[in-house]
Length: 134
Image: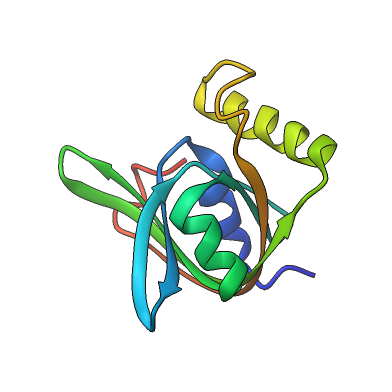
């Protein structure tokens, strides 16, 4: 059972907005934008470089997702979770297709990136304009 409230799930699944992934490196936060896909209490990202290295060393992560319109926040969701690096290339390819489809990218975008699944442990959210979120 997901620890994410149903309204927050709806927001996470609603639009192709950027998430900011927080990882830890040398006891300091490292935050970077990522594309993501959320379903059933799990976030999928595909990544490489510093973010991937950080997750391999410390799987505890945070995600901040926010939707703005003309500089005004419509809604935000913050997630804390535990990341797992998935080495299976078939699973990674399927995840890349799902994420690329969400963001309107070609099927081969980010083909070199590695799949990371984040099991959500806790979630908070807030909407700022109920009329703006459907």
